[in-house]
Length: 371
Image (tube, rainbow, N blue to C red; front, side, top):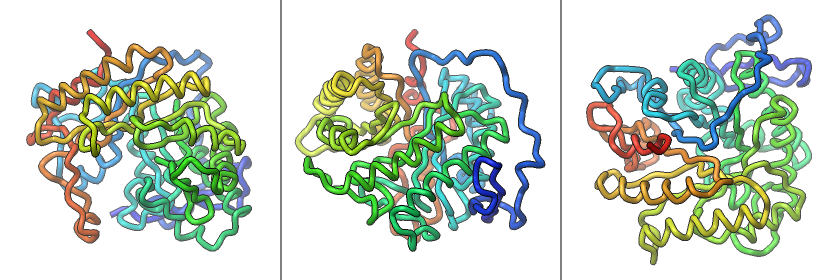
């Protein structure tokens, strides 16, 4: 089981600041580690990204799960996804995940190295929390809860630099970085909480926190694209991004989640069409690229799932400024769930779309360039 570590920051970050989110109890001196040689060759990015968030993969492997390629041969999950035609992977980061260290710095670094070795680009997703952050919970990390607003802004900036500096020292260069996860209601509650309505409510605090992450990303990886991410792609979100940008909020790319099933009063066709309309509107209104950073379908009817996602992927590929789509945790199978779910009384994730033998289903195979 992983334990928390601290590692010293580089000169870019105050030497007195530490990040607790790894394995060993002794500090690791990043200055003593030799970074990989920087390549002088320009990076060529695909015009459209296909990928997945497989942040649970290492925890599944710890619990004895293995993954197989389409031929039935056991293989690294990232190699499997690359072999299917994917070109990017998304990895979430939690500040101090005491429940085993999953999605802490060491765990993220290990997975990022595997993804890079497989030839995948990387998206880093900062939750700025010790556990999941989403519209229902945006819990301030335990170690930050006594900080006032100004100090929280500083801590977000320093922490983001610490994590990204550590990745950079290990040869990891993310193409995209999310500063917050599904932040429709803000983040780092209560300081950065905003109302889930069209009214302006505390966007100033939230925008300052978000911008602290944005500025930190640009300080370490100037070429990385910074994403601000909301849920419910099918809904009108112009009001939210207007409030955010009017408060001084910065972003390079709009990130959206799209789960088209089970929406009250809507068929999946209506949800897909609503998302397409909203994506086009956001692009036109804010002059920003859009990236569908999460999608998924119920795994009780994969045939229908193929139909739903084929429809959506076909349509977003026709939008020149829609940059890609990622499936959220497709690798789950056999009703596996994290151990903490039992404690919380949660069911297993029902949108995992690997087969019972650990091989990718036809749904996963949709996430590749058009033939």
